Length: 238
Image (cartoon, rainbow, N blue to C red; front, side, top):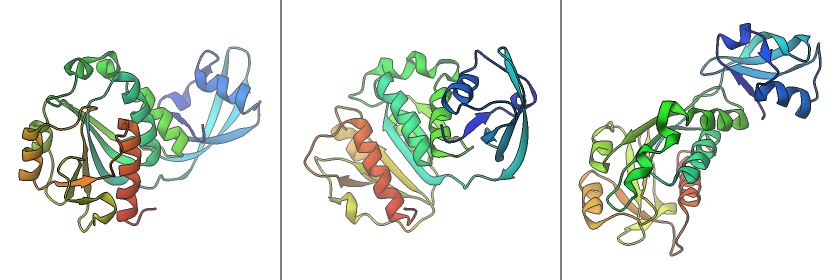
């Protein structure tokens, strides 16, 4: 972890030895009483924490606010909801990359049970967002939403955005040729089986440009990572 995050009220309380952050500070960072490390408040300021008291049961910390995280990138990823292990990796990796919206949707060819898997219950997915934010060195977490259908997902979008969908069947241009000229990019990536003809028509009717990333069949997480890189490059962010 490049940054250790805490809830706002946690930083005022002793950190128990059973907490994974205690273990990381002691065993990985090998810090002791008087030492300090980079830390932050979730969706708040970043800074340095110092270990002011330490024993085998807990550590007490002080926190000095020093900086504010850079805003997340205005990129909405619409993702046909994948298998839970894939979803966990996506939540972590795309948070680390700085995407500000992760919207998961049911699709006509996708497995419907994935929308109700345990990862989505009681916001368990938030643990993976935190892991990604700590890796990326940011205190900010992206917005995560779920939709039962692609149509409902598209209806929730705004207006000032460039819209594109990955599709190897009817794409009109390579993703490398896509240009961004609005405040936000929306990228739609289908489920493992891709889009149906009806979903393609819906996307095109909703001002999505169908883009190709070549002839190779990619795993969902690979497609998401590559598409995010192209989007950030098109926005001049990387």
